[in-house]
Image: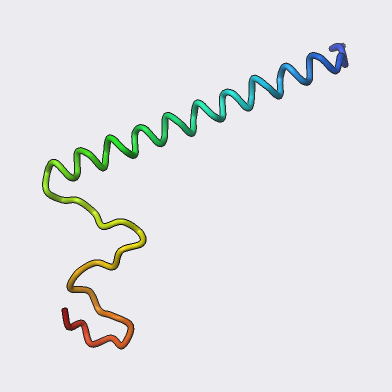
Length: 64
């Protein structure tokens, strides 16, 4: 049966937190690289905070 040493649990939690940080950083880097490739190809997507040009606005008329 395994040990219940608190130091072992703390070490495991630190390692898990480090792994999660590395995973988030890797995802962020791959997203940035994908955005860079898309921008280079001319298919840049608009930012989430900016409305897309030519789309229907709040009143639904779709005029630019």
